[in-house]
Image (tube, rainbow, N blue to C red):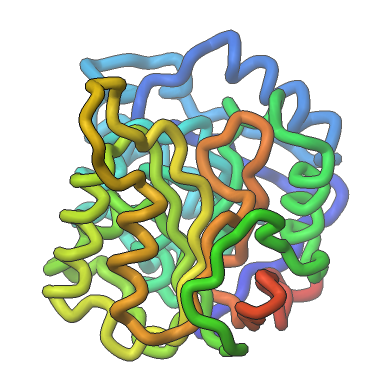
Length: 309
């Protein structure tokens, strides 16, 4: 791990930013109340939380300014994201990684925020947490909320298990975890923000992408050589990724994932509880070492994602 943020302590400062899409006010307020109950922290809300410009939470310039303010705060331990949506990739070229290098802190989010997690790891060597955004917290199950809090506090939570998973290839492997939304990861191929997957365990999830689009995305990653040297893959939720009812036979999203990833010849397990399900999104430590025991359908964290206070 190149650099490690300090674990969250009671009274520490946590920034909440809106780096992508506009934030639905009611869901955000409910999630913020949950966050206040679970974190004894000073919460700082970005000025653009309630802004909207097209399908963004304000202009690129405004979102960048707010994100830089959060990343550069020397007294902050964590930057939580309000929601995903779309827009984070538009900011990557202008983001200053030196802010994060000087003041390492944990970024928390998933979906479109995958782009920021990859940027933090590739450009600054800082690990992060692939986990619930604020608008998801009011419906997230208690176990997943506690898992997020444990990771923020520098603890090592119990392994997560795929209770209904499919083992494509068995075996046990260890590696650095890279956790991402599948389509956002594909969008980073060919850019300087794409993380190397050599020696990594990749965790992927997806939402509202039809099976043929998932096939196309995985084929692109394979053809581009992005998965060369990968140690293993864990697949989370494929939420609303089926074809509409047309009466036509076709492979399911799960069928596509199994067929495409089987070509890697490394341990692959589907069915892990992270992604866009309103109730389940187990937080994962992007950039920390993990052990995938495919035959037991379990993923174990081998080190804390945050260092001691």
